[in-house]
Every structure is written in structure tokens, then in C-alpha cells.
Image 1 (tube, helix red, strand yellow):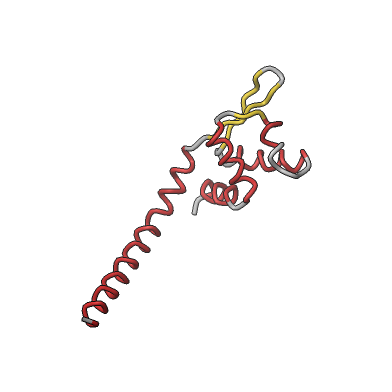
Image 2 (cartoon, rainbow, N blue to C red):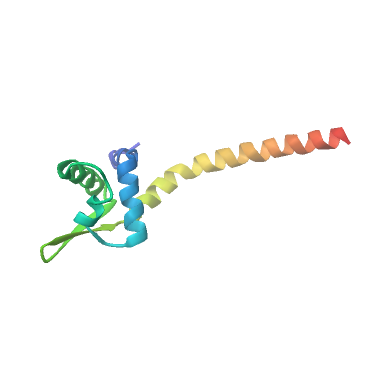
Length: 110
């Protein structure tokens, strides 16, 4: 795995960070105060969660007057999907094989 992939998977490992991504996906660009309001944690701890997401390239920050807006950057998630694709194919082949075995068992019962 590359350093970029390591950073992406580390960022996605946290339920808090995954929820931030979900909120940004559903709501679009969101002020940091509004995002923080969804979590029962101290502001410095939440800021650390956002820093990890920024460094992984999953979000970006834009200043709009006195507000800081966060926006989802979905492009790195395509890299995760690309990495996971061979595993999906692996399991699909295994499940197809299981289906064939089960179908043959049903034929034996009749």
C-alpha cells in the first residue's frame, strides 16, 4: 500500500470521520460549527478529526467571511473503491461457487 492509501484508510477507520463524510455527502458544504454540533466532543478533538480528513484529501476547507465551510472531496474514495474491487470480485466468485453447490444439492434432493 502507498502512503496515500494508508492515509485514506486511516482516515476512514474512525466512525466520527465516516459520519462527518456522510454529513457532508448529504448536506453539501457545511460550516464547521454545524458539523461539530453533531458530536459530543471537545472542539480541539473535533478539529483534529477534520485535520485528518483534510490531510487525507477527503475534505477541503473554504473561508466565507468569518465562517469555515467544509466540503466533501469524493475523488479519493474512488481510489478506495479501486483498491477494494479485486476483493469484491473474489467474494462474488466464491458466492457464485456456493450458489452452484447449493443448486446441485437441490437437484440431488429431487
